[in-house]
Length: 161
Image 1 (spheres, helix red, strand yellow):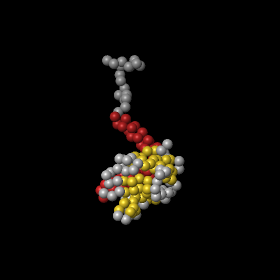
Image 2: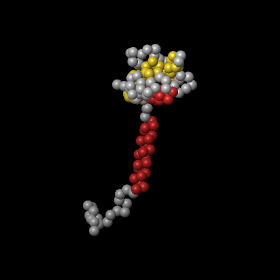
Image 3: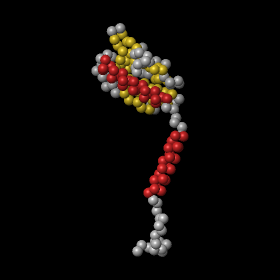
Image 4: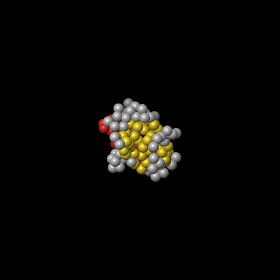
């Protein structure tokens, strides 16, 4: 027969925690953590969202260049960015209502471009899936993100230091 440290031979019926009590405690802790995460300030996400949006459109431009078998270029200005397609008449801007049409930067966002940019064309996407390598840094309220495109056409977004 088991003997407790108190000298009693009998175990209390309510010793320990039931599974239901443990689950309720975990639920209360989870709800508390969720509330804290929702109430915490999110910080400034403007630069990150703009960088991710730009990167997604750059990937789309690379794919469209292959599909339509025509070079495309990314044109960046202080006001925003858009894409142009090379056709028989020269560089033609994408239609404003298309996925590759001109987009205005969010207010207060600044784009830092490579030094050797001709007529705002930062990167060129070729019909074979490649691209001209480029780096664009987007900055807003002290937060900076960079969008890199490699010669292979891969696009990468990282926080700038």
